Length: 82
Image (cartoon, rainbow, N blue to C red):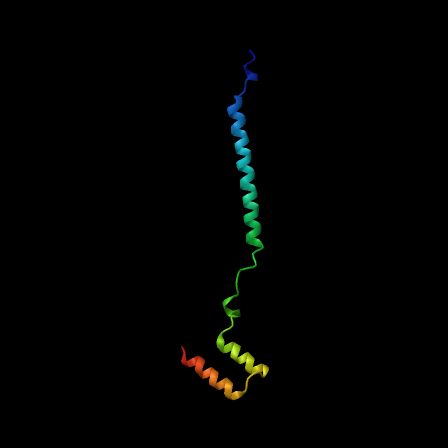
């Protein structure tokens, strides 16, 4: 009459312990994956923000770092390399 006390034995306890470890592992892995995806800063520049050589040359000319002759010479060199 006391068979209710026997339960599933040590195999059931082992299976429950392993499932607990697997469950916690999956929860921690999922949390870390979500955190890394949200806080990622190395997404790189957008294509519109990527400076082209001509844009850099225009900016240098606008700041007065180079004169008109050097600007036109370098611009022609850049365009001839295409």
